[in-house]
Image 1 (tube, rainbow, N blue to C red):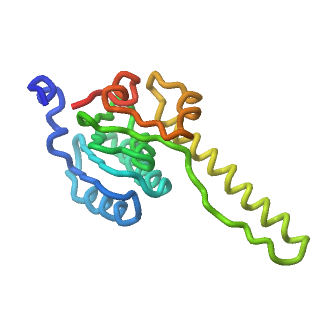
Image 2: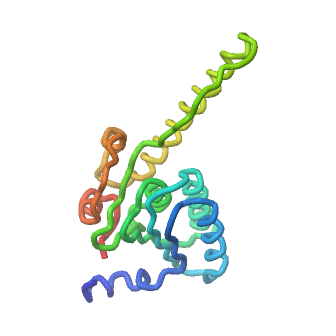
Image 3: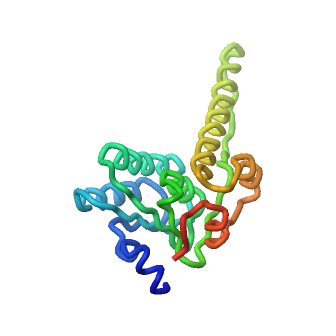
Length: 189
């Protein structure tokens, strides 16, 4: 880190919340525990390193960030370190672009949500259409939730939602400097 970067963002060197590993309920519990021990006022810094995990847990953690920002009027910075993949990018999307940072050589990876499931058709014929419709509704709403996340991730950046949506099926890896140049993060440290 250069001296000028250290002077511009001194808080990034001493994060209040450090998250690493799979985004799951254990991480969420750790996140809540660390948040509860943070100073009651002032800016907060949250770091994350993850290869991914549960996108709904990432959304829940992001909602906590949003609620603190909106109800307490606090600025919260995001610092992605090494890997911000999948659910990590979902969590990052909860932070405004001007509050997002990555360390050098970090990569973001964005992809579509995945589903592996088997539909068992068993029972009276009149009940089977409801089983199929329920699964179809699950898929349709999962797509809507995914697209909401893509929109949140690109809001304030140079990346169009359609571009994000089109690149996600092939696992879009974005290097830190490219993310900065695309406006997905404010800076690389």
